[in-house]
Length: 88
Image (cartoon, rainbow, N blue to C red):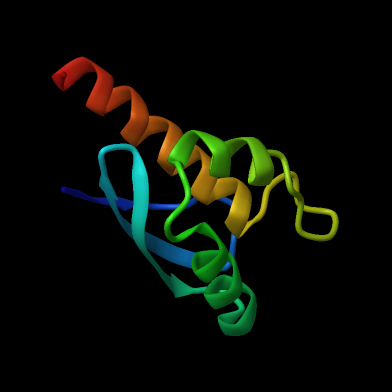
């Protein structure tokens, strides 16, 4: 199991902590952002393959912003997936 911390850009959330185990999202915690929305996104991701989560949430926008908390989580997961592939 590997834990990661990601600093989002362009969103209200200030930090995303998450854990992956064999490519499966085990835990997601946002610091900052819209509490109900980030808790909902986190709950929907847990137990799902990280690559599947990325496909679902990548590109989601928040209002007129070019990104969102879910989109930033997708970026974080992509980085973690690549890091795990390099370390395999």
